[in-house]
Length: 169
Image (tube, rainbow, N blue to C red; front, side, top):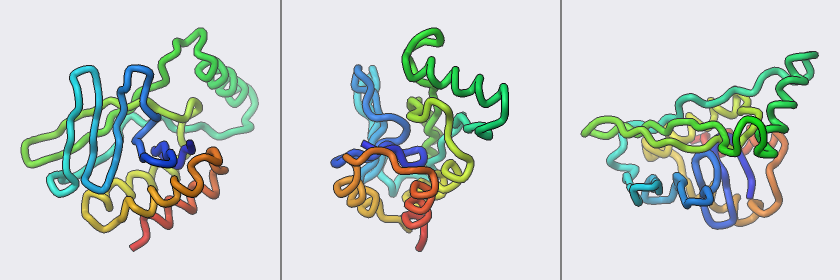
């Protein structure tokens, strides 16, 4: 499994945020659209029925290596990763899906305990917009996952390069 931007990519699936929780809650993307599984069951939206898809309340990673602030950030990340002190649930974000009937807000767990880099957030939002517009191919992301998903999360410059490639026309 690998995190690239706001996406968690496995060898067979692409998720927004984190992979499925213990209770099965997740948001999965595929060629047809978006599928959300929560305590109320499964919900699906086809790409063609969506007007927009954005992720709100995304935790932004602070600037690393800045004295006390960076040390505190690392301590908080360690606590979140270990699941102690601040609770075992990762921070939540909201996937906002606009349709002709209104906006659906779907909670998703953040996969990056320390938050996401601003460039990765922007590129991820761009990829979602292009998927909705029909100008991006999720197949490229899925193909990368089949080949590389088991290798772990790449370094930030590689993640950004992947997102740029997936968002280019």
